[in-house]
Image (cartoon, rainbow, N blue to C red; front, side, top):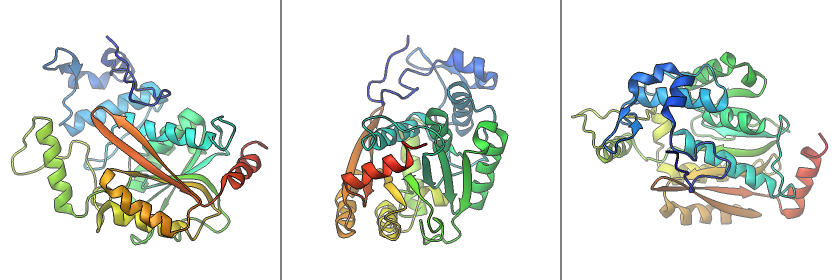
Length: 316
């Protein structure tokens, strides 16, 4: 039986329960990882990083036409439904400046801060809306793997490019080129403040899944240090992003970032207020029992936003 997940965005392709027989048709290698769970339904062991990666490969092939996708062990392997939600809600945000119509095509360009080895946001954004992307990362290994995914899938080759942010202390600085413009930026920031905090969070996740791996914590969704933690945590990272966005106010229509904890919002709003932002939006999303959200900000008022849309989206 296919039950709709009303909490996901209406355009999200993952609103129904995973149809494992169909996914196995798309990717037969998934078959050994699927079993009947305690509720009598088909599932995988979500505490097993190999099974999670195989599920992602199947989802990307089945729903997005990505024939070749792989990441090295220990790199972040994100849950795709939630990543898709961020893309779709960003599309709605852009539509607000475009008479309610989602702008589509290669002339819409996004900047993915922390593309990771998985390249998930550009894949979904391009395959759903035809958008182009620049992906950045501080990790050279992640950049190399993302480039390999792009090269292996012809539909991505002329749509997605990667840049390494060589200075871990910066986000936009020395990455966004003079005169370069983006319709949006997006980010899934590292939300732990230290390696030990990241490991503790992973151990808690495994316990919630009913899995105990002894002394060593196995990350079911993986993650390098730069993907999982940043000194000062999520708030410090987003504050830095806000600060650096003030240097390029006319080069991006909407800046945005996921915020994992609602308790962090007051600190982020304070930083935005001090930065002289024209408009701030907080968009809530829910996946399962987890509620997440992203905060978006722009230095442009409503008239300037419409002018941006007229100039960039409607004349192509």
